[in-house]
Length: 432
Ligand code: 5AD
Ligand code: SF4
Image (cartoon, rainbow, N blue to C red):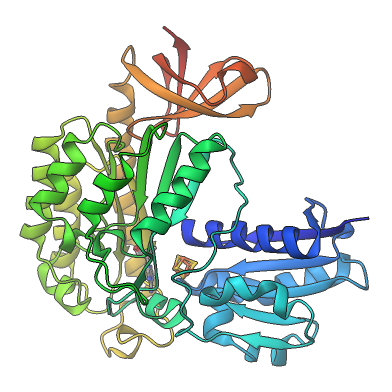
């Protein structure tokens, strides 16, 4: 009988992909099958995120809950970014944890699973040529790492400490991997990296020279691949050639994440982001001019140390000017191993909270206007999931979530859909 694996994934798309990688390794080498039931599991993995403080605090209470409900023989492993930054402290605080595996070490999962209290968290492990795990949580879409780690030093961010230095994966391996995914039914690929458009800056051992724009050109030649998405790019590396390629290449989906973090040039400097408010607005304007159909999403942090009312107004001003279709906004959370955590001008939590509420309320108004304007428009939707009550969901080229009445025949197809009803998070439509 096969063994059962219960895996919980927190955090970003990189983590989702790391979970897929571990699922594939454990299935191929150890015959584990996934279960949704904690009580049935022989192995429980919590794939953690440490970008903000809250999920880290939750980890230990969660381990307690899992201990209560799991089979006595079931093992517990903590993997991902919190595993990287806390290391063996996790086992000291929670001795019931069997192993700790860092975000850069996921391909070692079948080794650590057999060792009691193994801790593998090195951040200089070169995974750039790793075999991509052969498991996809959605058969119609593939996620493919193009780089690992991060070379930036944003002063708020723990990721360089948890995922190590940036290494690009050779382009022929990426093309091979996507070609394989297409042959097994994926028409869409999501290229993943902490900093995708810094691609090509450093390869593990290969001598190649290929930047992100050239990589996009190579990938778009793959026959049968219809849609290319990527996350996350950095505004600093959005040169004209890249925006031109984004706008003119029909296979590249017209949805782009441009993480702002703050609208204030002086805060951007304190964050070490490498661009000003004006640079950022200029890049967004270029995208809107060359590609008016594109949707732009962003990440914003409020309450970064030293943020004055005027700094915050700059952030509100950028929101007003760019009108992001999607905005992920967070209250600043001081993190270990980061410069900003040591700054002596931390902001009062209530002030940050009020600013966050104001920012989100204004964005909600903008979003309502954007979504209402979709009524009656037609989008090409790639259907990839069956939903309850005879509905099927998919995404438009520009990333909007759609629901239509339909059955499995629609899955894996790209079909024109007319919007009949709008809401903040999704659109209902009919096939045309
Ligand atoms: N506090 C709050 N938000 C953060 N992010 C990264 N680090 C922090 C932090 N210390 C946000 C950034 C990033 C997103 C993934 O998480 O906006 O783009
Ligand atoms: Fe979280 Fe960042 Fe790690 Fe992703 S890379 S899991 S967002 S800390």
